[in-house]
Image (tube, rainbow, N blue to C red):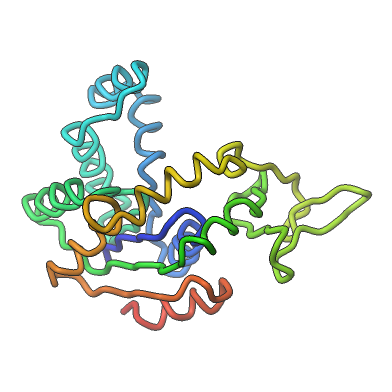
Amino acid sequence: MNILVFGPNGSGKGTQGAIVQKKYNLPHIESGAIFRLNIGGGTELGKQAKEYIDRGDLVPDGITIPMILDRLKADDCKKGWILDGFPRNKVQAETLAKALNDAGIKLDYVVEIVLPRDVAKLRITGRRLCVNDNNHPNHVAFEAIKPVEKDGKIVCRVCGGDLKTRADDQDDTAIDKRHDIYYDDKTGTMAAVNYFKGLGTAKVISVDGRSAIPEVSEAIMSKLA
């Protein structure tokens, strides 16, 4: 079962990907981790990517997509995978779809977590990250997943670990920039989502991201084979 997950920053797609991973025992692959793996491992693609990153430039798709394909062909992906964080625009979607087809890799599901932009922004600014597990939900604005106080300190509601914030989660300009890319339905990530929908080769699962985490999970799981 090969799954592509889409959702704006703040939609909880990382959390949902982890839940699907645990149920189906599939590797949850994030594009950032692939870069770190290749660069840290000193692969040829990693060396090429590092040159661009060190200059502050975007890594070309001609390097990024081969990295992703190599990861999807790994032994632990033989029974399927969950990919999120890529593609981020329509051109990448077209290139990835062709690369998967050429490699004989079938995409089974496209999961889209739908969330209004204003709600997504609120979720970002109020979220707190557990140092033990980023998928432990903690949010100062939502009663159901508010962090707890222990010995005068606000800690993770799940494991009691320390909490932190990402600097860009508190930066309106950074948040708007990320969302400008995602919600762009002409060339951005929404254009990529619509491209895969239009192909008609994978089953599309669209769920309302405004619901609670268990409800979103149930909506996704009920439609996965």
